[in-house]
Length: 102
Image 1: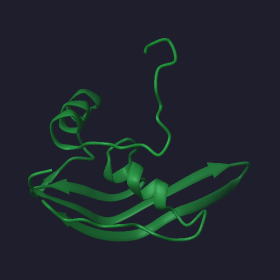
Image 2: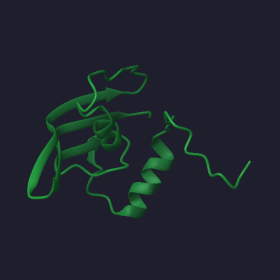
Image 3: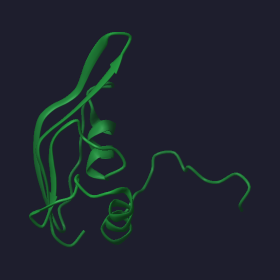
């Protein structure tokens, strides 16, 4: 990432069986190029959900994601895929390898 990435009032909710669960509410985070951060908390506190939103693997239910001042959570799937390819790198905890490839 070379620019500034911002989460503005980000929220993520899940619905099921008539119950709505708020995984994240009103999160504000600014990440600058070269920042080294860690996100810590107990199991179920929303760490993975936040990382999925920052990594644009999921979309927030409220709030906005911005990169260099431009909203990115409004991009269509192709634009979002291009943005992810050009600006974001992932190191997954599990390898997520394709079993048929060596």
